[in-house]
Amino acid sequence: MKLLQSRGLKPVLHAAVFGSVLVAAAPAYGQTITAVMHSGLRMMDPIQSTAFITREHGYMIYDTLVGMDSDFTVQPQMADWRVSDDGKTYTFTLRDGLKWHDGTPVTAEDCVASIKRWLDNDNTGPVIKDFLVGYNIVNGQEFEVQLNEPTSLLLDSLAKISSRPAFMMPKRIVEASAGKAVAEMIGSGPFKFVAAEFRPGVKVVYEKNTDYIPRSEPNDWTSGGKVVNVDKVEWVSMPDAMTAANALLNGEVDYIEHYPYDLLPLVQNNPELVTKVIDPLGNWSYYRMNHLYPPFDNKLVRQAAMYAVSQEDVMKALVGNPDYYSTCPSPFGCGTPNASDSGKDMIVPGNIEKAKALLAEANYDGTPVVLLHPTDHVMAAPQPVVIAAALRNAGFTVDMQSMDWQSVVSRRANNQAPKDGGWGIFSTYGIIAAAVDPFANTTIAANGDKAWFGWPDVPEIEALRVQYAKAVSKEEKQSIAAKIQEIVLDEGVIVPLGQFRTPAAYSTALSDLPEAPITAFWGVKKQ
Image (cartoon, rainbow, N blue to C red; front, side):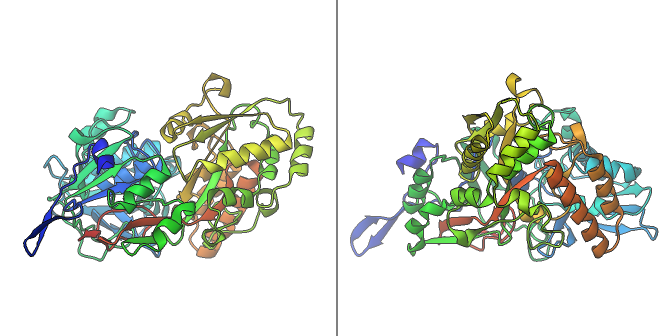
């Protein structure tokens, strides 16, 4: 209880009467779920930031025009749609009763403004804009998106789960942002952000949006009815894993999003707790090199780094338990339709001698590799330590700089030279469900300063991505994706480190947690 109070939480004590004896019962927190997320929340605009904690915040308070189900099929969400016979016009019709959290109705103009801002920020934007003719506001609830030729990319991208989902926002907030992060957290989603209780990096509070009207279909991933069964959800930050574990064991929190693998024995035999993999597809870990500056502006040096690091070593450090991880060379996720084994020899086993030979061929001069190391993120802290050791063994000079995760998120957006506050390598992870094609996977884009952090410039990849967008058959798309993977790994655009599944741990008081590639609190019930 002291732990809760130190974080501004207020437990409620109930008393139970047994015979003539008044007994203080265990703490009960009514219809509030207290959750320990993987990171504290500071960056709050899910259109500008690709950080997962920012994305999860986005799903709490915003909604999307369309959703994605577990068969990777696009489904209606805020809107239904129809496509013209020539495939060039998409007409979206908002469903009745949609309101922003300030009580104003959601309009077609709001959605068009949101789409425009999303396209200006998302890696799919430049490609979609090449297909885009314009928009037409039909009425308050209906608008058209007009294309110059048919493509499945528009609908697929509007439905993508991560990163930068196409969240809808009020037009006035979008226009006021003027290229910066939005200043107001006003959405139309199932929860409302409680600004008065927000403590950046420490605590976030969401309350049920009583005006939200869920869809009637069963919930499936980000599609269907997002029914809220609790009054509040509170995210509390506990960077120390043991502190969080003890808080769960003591009933001070209800849910831990990523429970540490080495602490699983503490909870697996506890009848009051549940451990479960919420996302059966799981995640893939990877690292990104900065292509703009030495030493990684040299392709041979990038390849040397890729040969140096062993996926097995990374997964052992990150996960440990082989039941929860596997090696995989594909940035599209092994076991998915677009995966291949291309590049396996370079990035899976680890080959220090080959790495040394490539460094010699590249005339590497000892330029330090500035490696960002988050210390407070259990799923992103081990990778840099393993990478640093491997690079040093191969002959790299490594400057590993430790900081909190939110500082890494901020620092990786800095495109100055490493010596001027930039960076050389950072590592993170993503959900496999959002990596299955060359557009949903943010890391594949290689369009220079418009690409994701690291800014690779490989025109051949961009040309293949356009071919993928125009492809009709599944077989054609798979063939193009295989070519993309080959070039992505040869150029060191992104370096997979293996894939893994993460267990959540939570109280048996919670039920009906949705299985999905995101952490969602709609549908969850609390006794």
